[in-house]
Length: 176
Ligand code: 5GP
Image (cartoon, rainbow, N blue to C red; front, top):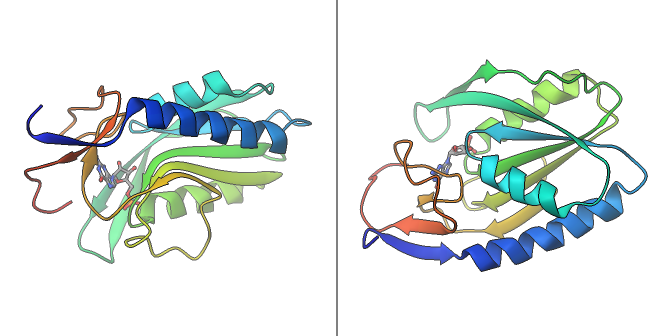
């Protein structure tokens, strides 16, 4: 573990998730929203968040792959679509981290095509110094500086997703 430095502990995440869940309970107390988790990174956040909310809700997952050519361009490819019909439904997107904003923009545009009743975006982490978005992330767990982090669903080379907190890597990758 000497390669890693703790940035956000499991306890900090758990208490922030309780606050987010309370906010969502209040917003959707009269509705049955569909939570859509973005695989793979949001699996742990999705599971913990849904254990804390009290409203009736449904869930689904979407999987994307993103390739970033450089700072300003990149492509996002759909690997697994949602199964649910979200037309006229209240949709809550659950993302692990918003970095350049490319992934969340792709998802938002795709979801809006189906004409949902509302779209709420929740991201556990947000790097506001990096993201160039023309819309707001409705709920952000923690704003972090533009450094590469792992754990709590987030990987480096597919590893470290199982850590219960968020860590910064003390060495590599050179370029995230
Ligand atoms: P964006 O499209 O906003 O640039 O990036 C979103 C995706 O890039 C996230 O869903 C995540 O998979 C990955 N990503 C962005 N920043 C980090 C980071 O600091 N650590 C890890 N492990 N993945 C990141």
